[in-house]
Image 1 (cartoon, rainbow, N blue to C red):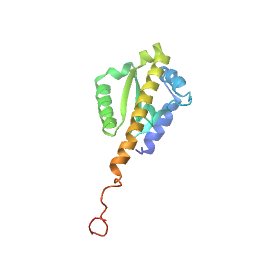
Image 2 (cartoon, rainbow, N blue to C red):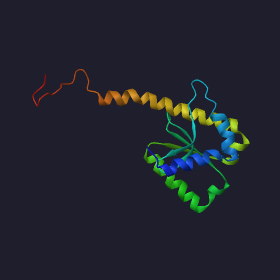
Image 3 (cartoon, rainbow, N blue to C red):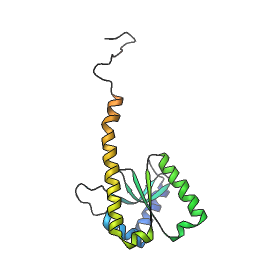
Length: 148
């Protein structure tokens, strides 16, 4: 989904000012080892900017700081999460304190989620293609005529 130029500018600005938990997690997620899912930080998705995003898994990771518990933030998060879920994204939220306590464990958990989701999506791809392609034994109608 394409985002507005305003959202792209906001994402660029946010990349320059990561919070301490985001920076700790990004230091681990950006290490691109072979076979591990690739993540982007402060990635625009529609009108929103995800803290971290794995495209192959359609996985959005959000780090929730202390200010995320206010009524207006809770409402905004619910609205945003629903918007993303409706478009096929999975949103997972981590408390900032949990990330700071053990960023290695948080990163491992996120890598495992992304790998499982991308494997599941890959397994469904052949099923989707098979359902869309006519089988070799099914009759094909041409020129409005009968079966061939």
